[in-house]
View 1: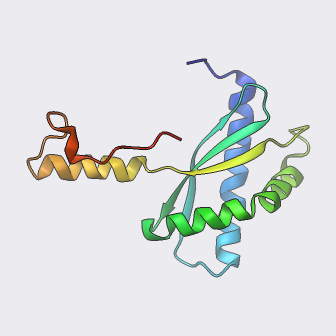
View 2 (view 1 turned 180 degrees about the horizontal axis):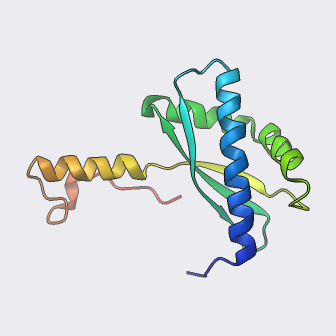
Amino acid sequence: MEQESQRQKKIASVLQRDLVDVLQRAATQGGMQGVLISVTKVKVTVDLSVAKVYLSIFPNNKAKELVEGIKSNTALIRHELAQRTKKQLRRMPQLEFFIDDSLEYIDLIDKSLKDGDNPIKDPSFLEKRKKS
């Protein structure tokens, strides 16, 4: 795995900070009170053309629906980000959104261990995670 450059890290942190604000504001303006959207990670490709954005959404039961809504509004979100970051970025990367299910997965492991089922000895206790 290749190490991220300083430029990639800087762009990722700028995007992460501004995306949280844009997404949370859009959710509240869209009438979704009580929904918490956090951007857990942003990974920018080496050529700085694509940013993979990992979202953690609470409550979990609204996550899929919300991510689909975000994906369908990617162009508007990208435009809003471009306006906010025009002094820092020349070109706005394409945005790809994914659900970050790592907290859910950790919770599943924790429950399995408390129930006496050992997912290390018998991995069938845990669902297979999809690589995105």
